[in-house]
Image 1 (cartoon, rainbow over the protein chains, first blue to last red):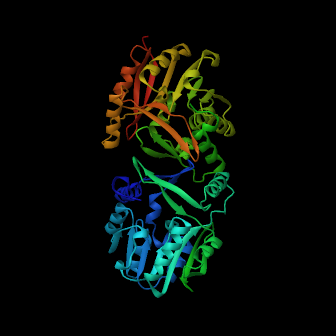
Image 2 (tube, helix red, strand yellow; image 1 turned 135 degrees about the horizontal axis):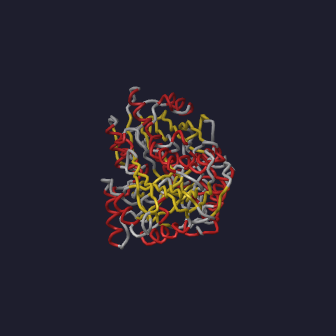
Image 3 (tube, each protein chain N blue to C red; image 1 turned 30 degrees about the vertical axis):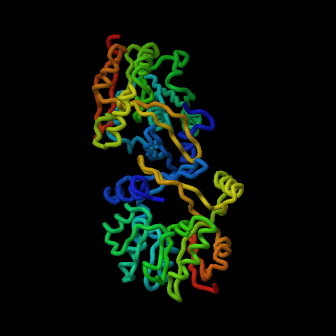
Length: 245
Length: 245
């Protein structure tokens, strides 16, 4: 979804890196006309400043790690510094460039659907920063999760962050859930695009699920949630392990 | 240009006021597809935190004041606190509501083109925060400036802030200047709209001029620049007094 001239997300990360902490802000447009602002600096936050549930999640990482949607590499760089072998992948060429400039050793410009056994087997698949959402929709999520089984070791874990979309009273979001139901989409399946200056990414789907929905989604995929790590808000991390296929 | 459900600018100011300093950000869309972010908190800044050239400009205020495009009232409230009679006008109903809630005594929901002698005479017309731009284009600016003569006292001043659009090396802005020249507009005449959440203002024109352009624009209007107050950047304030008509 993020290519060349349309790499708005990557341009924002790259400009923020070059600005050395300056004012760089990008825009998230949702397909109901909602505009929100994204802060590239958030993709550069150091471990010490992460929310506790993200710090806690790092204790569940083991073995060889695949960081899916690595952004500016904040999680991958931390784990690399801890001695883990980490491959960071992102669809955004400029995000990957930023990771390289920041010292991440193993990177690939690649979407989650392009992950294959050619990358070798992983012990941990990391989807932090709400990146469970990169699974995009219910059908694709179940297809990808089944694929992940074959790309991971016997004791593999998925560490996936999401946000419960129902923890809101905001009428704009409640109306969006209903809009999604009416068009046969999951309520938390948002269609968005990133804008930064004159750059605009193509539209893409990003999936937010409640804990219950995540458990339902995993049924029959060969993966099971063994623990939830809660934040102070609607965001949470699921520790997911191989279960009955 | 800013009415009812389309008062994106006002909604952002109002939500920022209600948030008591929370994270409220709005979006500025330019008609070349450039997206930028606006920070409502900037419209609430107290005198002590203004840039020096804005503080200095307050020394030129005298008599009865009209604050054109008063926003959240930061300049009008300061002057009211200093004992000046100040009428704040803004096209945004919610901006005016914010001013009232913050204690501004005299307000009107009104565009710069609706100013008339029914408001009484003014000794100072204030257009801070780049609000010389509200004059919109060369032709309208000259028409309005001539009208202002009849609405002001003999010793009246206009205190107007603008930004020199040519103090940039940014290829996106340089291309926009050329785009404007080709369609017969002043290079610094930007067409923009404000977006905030799902609210969007209608498109409107906002005029940035260099000092030289401002002096050319004033010729024959009965107003003359008597002093420029410089900032550290491209922004400046002109002190404008009645000159030969």
